[in-house]
Amino acid sequence: MPKAQLFASKSTALAASRFARDTRGGVLTAFAVVIVVLISFVGAAVDYSGARQQREKMQTALDSAIVVAATTSGENGEKRKAFNKAFGAQYPAVGPVMSASATLDLSDPSQLAASASGRVKTSLISMIGVRDLAIGVRSSARVATGVEFALVLDVSGSMKYPDMSGSPRIDVLKAAATNLVDTAVANAGPGANLKFGYVPFTMNVNIGTANAGYVDDTSNALFSGTQWAGCVMERAVPNHLSNAYSGSNKWRAYIHPPEPNSGGSCDNPSNGTNSGYNVIDAYIAGNPNPYTRGPNYNCVRHPIAPLTTSASAIKTQLATLTAEYNMGTILAPGVSWGTRILTPNAPFSGADPIGGTTRKIMVMLTDGAQTTEMRYPNCSTETNTSTPYSYTPSTFGLTGRSIGPNGPRDFFGPYGYIYDSDPFGNNYTDYSQVDASLDPLALQACAFAKTQGIEIYSIAVSSFAGPGTSVYNTLKSCATNDDHFFYATDATTLTNTFADIARKATSLVRTK
Image 1 (cartoon, rainbow, N blue to C red):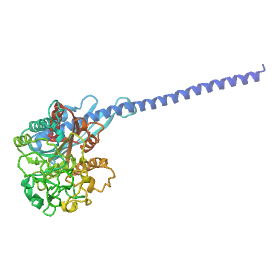
Image 2 (cartoon, rainbow, N blue to C red; image 1 turned 90 degrees about the vertical axis):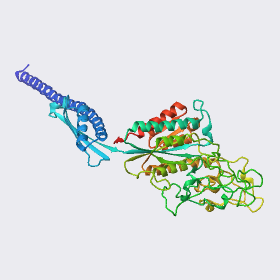
Image 3 (tube, rainbow, N blue to C red; image 1 turned 30 degrees about the horizontal axis):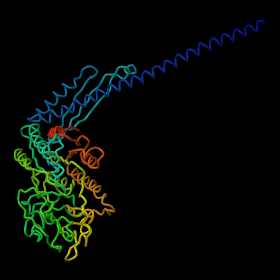
Image 4 (cartoon, one colour; image 1 turned 180 degrees about the vertical axis):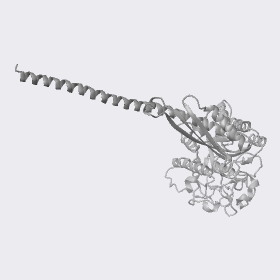
């Protein structure tokens, strides 16, 4: 081979060798950079995950410490001392925690606030100069001075059924409600301001004859031969949910209208006119039977028990409750009157102010679907034998359309004849639509109660109010949240449910 060619070949080989060495060096350098970047990303993920776990532990410690401060008696100095001790014990500056401190704001004794901060050591990302990470949390606690309970209890005829561990539902309910009172007293401890009341309901609510001063029409001519038994109509739409009261917006006395007498199918027939009844049963105080012919027909006889601080008094009153057969169940009146006894308005003005330091708790219970029930045989085929039958809602302080000359198809309630008179303007085309419309009505009443600062616990009792039923869904939606809803089909479960509600409700310090 010529020298020139040999030289060229050697030069080419040397160049190739140098290129190979330079390429290997570049690859190694790039690989090293990639490794550092990967370690940084992995290290950041690991260290930030550790910092997040430490933050969660700090939050738990701070929440616990603020509860300790809120429940510590004495001056602010004692509360801060207890707060710092509790926080330091649960979140000491040891291990990966380089530092931790917490502060407590006691400027508002009903609304405590606290914050905590600290620094956590890193491990993997320390190699890129990040030696620690900062963490911080906040907490607040609302401090209640007492609790008001309104038990909204279904006392309709279906509560007579003995399917709860062999006992009638009403008897199990009374025992469970009594246990709620005892559990609340025991759990709240000395010094807590507790009040208890209840609202028995079926289709309507009885506010008690002693409250006649808050009700119009208690001396209506239709009460001739008897007297007003204490039930009230709900206000005309759209004011049917309101808890406001003044001398100009009283409630109206419940008066079941006279119905046609021509064929004997109507439950409360008149004397052939629109101004009287074939039979008027005298009102007897203490008689729980709602089937008294005349203006009080189907009026629940158990009156509301307003709020009282006497646990023994409310337990004595609970023991008097009975379940009596009636013509339907509607939740909304019970909820509305539960709201009214928990707000400081007449006719029950024993509640503390809304938005204050008192927790307001409504416990509502029912055992089946809402209904006004359809009559059979049908009263709508009947007429008066004298003057033409007519029902005019405004005569009873209600809205809706007038009906006649035939009688109504459904039963009368606190809103009137819901199907025939249609006070809510639902334009029913089939009777099956009536019961379905009662669920939205209940939800509206529950929503209004929540605007008044009331927490709602709801309880579905029996398989007739079980999963898949409309009332189950309504009760669950009425509750403040899912933790406030319960389903109970036996005595033990119902008793435990009431006790659980009592314990939750009397936790006077709530963190946020």
